[in-house]
Length: 302
Image 1 (tube, rainbow, N blue to C red):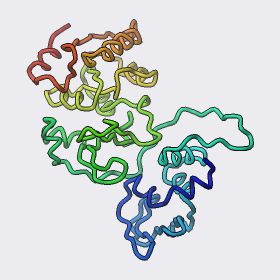
Image 2 (cartoon, rainbow, N blue to C red; image 1 turned 90 degrees about the vertical axis):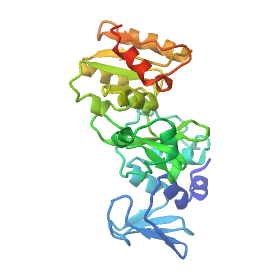
Image 3 (cartoon, rainbow, N blue to C red; image 1 turned 120 degrees about the horizontal axis):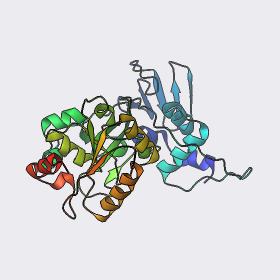
């Protein structure tokens, strides 16, 4: 798809909805409000012309089209903004007519977010999943009714320094995918809840697969728990864990993927850190076990 076609198909309204930007008022085919790029509070600092598909920031006196907005908002270059735009539209890679030789891409870095979503922490789904008020508050979880995570439970994800870098969106009604991550987010570069665990005095760290496994283990008194957001550990995740120099308690799901992931992780830390494997009943995961059963498994020496 040509660049001009992308710009014609992708509207500023799509971009506003995609990023979950609020606070803009519509009047006569225009949107106006505080600038979402510079986080000001002037209600007239930012304007969008819906018919021309252009934006303008009066604080810095500059603006442009949808691609320039993505570049400014995400702090990325043109090629990266184009890739984000294509993903929003769900179209194939753009192939330039001239200079068709591919440019090798560098591994993306999860940049800190410039916004925080307004979430409803009292949604019935959270209660149905057995989450306590304390757990919901500790992890900042809630129902989202805007942007790409609309009608999903939003789970904040932080990097190792504690900066918010993404929200994961959990489906509440069997919609696919079960988890939705923002375009450009690389979960292999992060470990869920690592930013808090690294500051604990525990001599061990519990590793699970998913968010709700992490919530369950944390709720029954084991704060030293992190989630891989999958059943394998990337080189970057492995490096973060090694830096802690703590004993590893590995408790992945009791399915084939979990067992295969366990073998690979044990091998990755062999001779580097002690690893204790906690095997779960076949076909189960930590979130599904009763609290006493889960506590017994974690309290066993082996």
